Image (cartoon, rainbow, N blue to C red; front, side):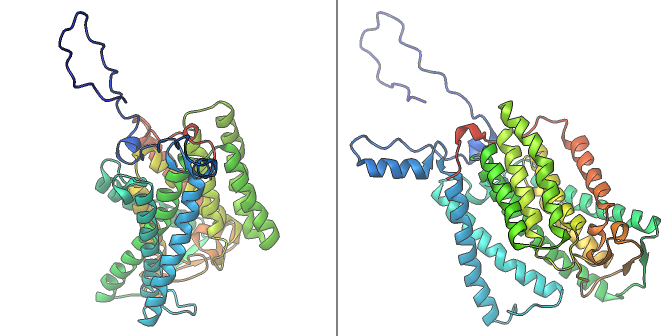
Length: 402
């Protein structure tokens, strides 16, 4: 946009030329967080400098690939420093700890502080207005969406438990807590699960989804997803990894069609494909996972992506994620990736075929989890999808990652 000339001519024999009309922001993301595109390097600069700047910088500032690489380097650096301090103060242990609210909270707090520090530095470098909130946290009605996400997570997991009990694939045991212990562990697990939701949604649906949306195209998405699958083929064994392969295949054709049709929203859904596949990959390291549980993790990642699309922020996803984990871990006392929490309220046990009951994986390892996820997806579309979809930066503005 050119500045309006403030100098008034002494004699005007013709009407002055009308200055170009200002164009409003194309999207909420551009209004609050899109950095100013860097000026092209001057022709007088050495060619090596011009080439280096072109490699590092794109139309939206630092290219997405470099941004992601810097983010994870800083994340591991800051988390390592915080983790070392926590070990010295005996807040966490280098050895595998029991599944308690304390060990879970402080273990996730290490990643949370590392994530916040990394995002703050990257946001500062990219000159994003609002810094941390710029990464899919600025949308409207944040408190309301967070609370509605909490309700949705509790109801969805409860529906899954209900279907398992109805089909006799799950039985209830005795209540494990009494008196003040019920409130105490409810609050402790509430904090721990909220921290899990903040960390996992902060990395995947806040920073990664935002950054990849503005910078990725189909071929980069295809390459990343292909590399994930190749990594599993070479280094991982077991049936659980098939959950990642399934989500990778399910996203292939839709993302290709969006690319061929040059859809405006293509970048967002390419990023959704990548982040959901990565979310499934991140859960393959958990003990007790089966392929349904891995697929469920990747699929719920996609549900959370849809929530960002229809609500304009990740607050619904954070609330739903925290409530889902709290309801499964504390309220019903079900296994979570093979781990049963210390200090749970109710007691549940799987019965019969693992395909239906989830077995050691817990409710997330049951094929019935697909129904719970579809229920959440339909609820999102019905409740929020009738509104105008949130506009997101287009991949056309930056065609390459790094």
